[in-house]
Amino acid sequence: MLFDQKKGQLPADKNTPLIFYCGGHHCDLSHQSAAAAAKLGYAKVFVYSAGFPEWKKQELPLWGNEASGVAVAAKAADPGALPEIITPDEFLAVLAAGNVALVDVRSEREFATGNIPGAINIPDGEFYNDLDETIKKLPTDRRVIFICATGARSAGAFFAVTDEPDQYKNPHGVQYLSKGITYDADGKFTILP
Image: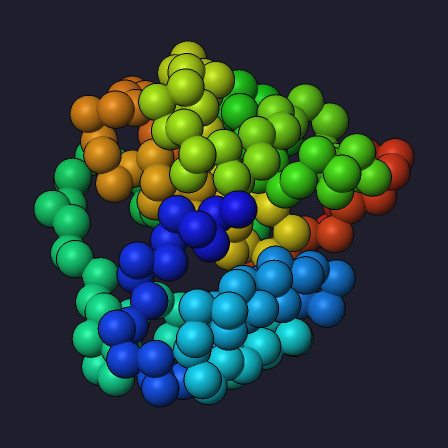
């Protein structure tokens, strides 16, 4: 479980309130993580079951805040680099134009119920379990865009890959879609607002 790899990032004070959220009501990862934190002795563990989409909509902090003491380190900007997040309009345009690799980081089960034709399925856990081997699965001959159901897992995979720029070099760029997507079994999809 990914929680076991990341539990060292939890605060030392076990009375610190912890709020877990994931993909929303259809996802149970936040409940699993909350249960694991409670087993470690954390006394104030909560689950925000509406998940990442609603959390983001409410403009709550997505990573780090003053209370936690966790801050995202600033990266040096590459003047020729693509923006980290691709807009829905640009996503639809590059998809229609072709020559883009979609990496769907949802679980195999989710991917099997519906996906965008041509997308590569690499569940997000693989990026945390064995990044070196997972990077070998990523194309370098075209732009790569990470997608998922809410934007949370695609962001996680994006940052796993780009935090160590020497590990994966793609001259065409890497981005992620931070919006939710619903997928139909026939390959149709809808980008959520």
